[in-house]
Image (cartoon, rainbow, N blue to C red; front, side, top):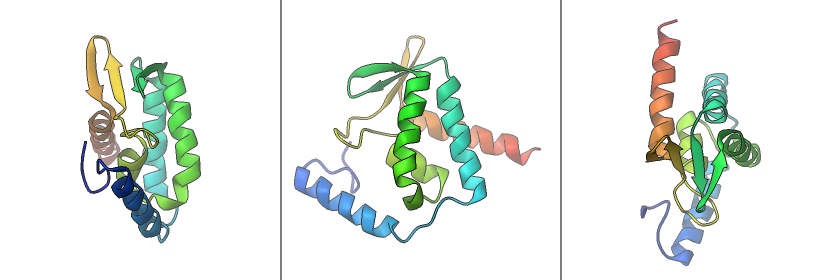
Length: 129
């Protein structure tokens, strides 16, 4: 995947990371609503019956949740929304930039869209309560 946040060259990736860190440094911890959404997404990952592929290795749901929670602990103050959590932590590897994948049964999907769909479903559920 190539974009402004994830360019192909190492130098461009480093520049994008520095730019994100500088922009994100002005942010605060997620507000209570965003925190509930992020907590829900972590729980959703952890209780899923799916497997997670990270850097070519397959992990059970609980391990994937632990990994994302660890990344979140280190970057929490730089994220404001559940969308930030998905985009910057749960879409791809911060070291290899390989996309995270979800394997549910025989279907493999990218983790970012899978979590974005769950976030939309969760928001609809909360809005109807």
